[in-house]
Image (cartoon, rainbow, N blue to C red; front, top):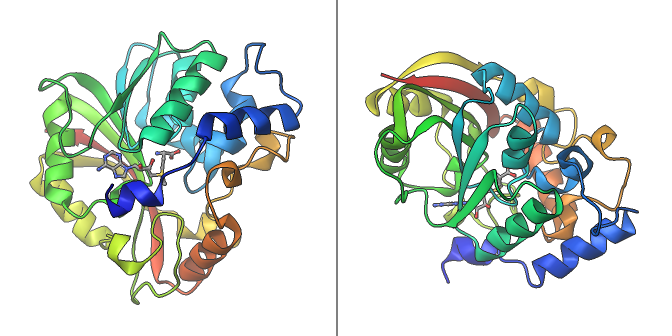
Length: 271
Ligand SMILES: C[S@@+](CC[C@H](N)C(=O)[O-])C[C@H]1O[C@@H](n2cnc3c(N)ncnc32)[C@H](O)[C@@H]1O
């Protein structure tokens, strides 16, 4: 097991998810809506709401075939599959998250629209030009080989296809508060600056449609919390499968407030 797989490993993930759903008053025997799960399965800055923002920025529509890279429990993939209604394939390194994603696909009745593939973003098991859009939220921070990552994204996109992403990037000072939600220790933390990110995207064959530093949206609150208003059930939270969440979230907030990290989002297009 690699360090990263250990970081994201979750014992009994299916049992934990089912217990949390029941504790939240949801009946797993009845079809669940992706919105009702939003506080549980959007493991990224800004939660469910940030996923909708990214969808609108990237103009994702029902006809799009989307690839979600580092999909986690595939919350965003189900959101896109339910509305606007696209077909989404997910790639995810962690077998536990894949198992959780498959379970939630079944409970939402979206298993025919959301595929889950256990593999690395650095070796995507798809032919060239397979997708209309590639989607990635809070994943690049775990991947050292950015050139290979973005070359793979570009390879599987059709010409003019969109790559929609949100990431933490390096700020002006070194990252010093650990654990963070994506890294227990510095050896797992692969942040580059926004300028370096734009440069490697350019070299990988993308033109920028939209790019913004949205750190101010997040620095006053919890940058890994999900919008609680999408789910009144407080039992649904990332803490179902993220250990030590409170400390990780506090460290992320502090790192943002002190400018050690930045939060960016963008949509770039394959040349
Ligand atoms: C912070 S989580 C974000 C999950 C999901 N994108 C979301 O927003 O809910 C980062 C995810 O990236 C996955 N990941 C990291 N490196 C990966 C790689 N090389 N290939 C595939 N998945 C990877 C991790 O296993 C983890 O599920």
